[in-house]
Length: 140
Image 1 (cartoon, rainbow, N blue to C red):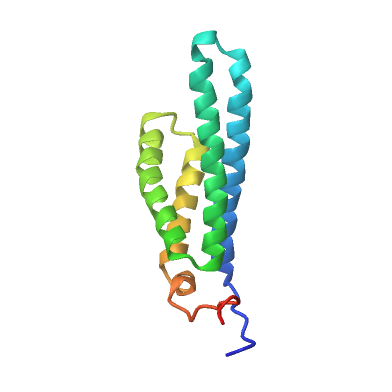
Image 2 (image 1 turned 30 degrees about the vertical axis):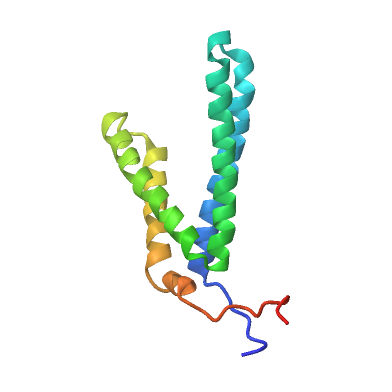
């Protein structure tokens, strides 16, 4: 269909927003960690610098993955799924071993599980089904 515009469902927009917000937060936290290297002992500067740079890069990767989810990239969906599979047990361990009133870990855990559901259960999963690709503008 020549003039058909594919509209994203609300749940896909929700998933993109969650991943993008996480990417922005990770990037900002990485900058703060990188700047904190001026407050640590000289022996720890390299480690803090690497942690900050890694956090920034991970945040930027999250933003790229959010863009891929918006476009219906199956690879982006798999990357987010792998990330959530790693994060959920870590949050459960954090909740079990720390203060029971750690509400931020509880909220993050719920958001990660919601994100996973949105990506794999309809109507969100329909966004990642095979569609006819857009015509290549450079093709003869």
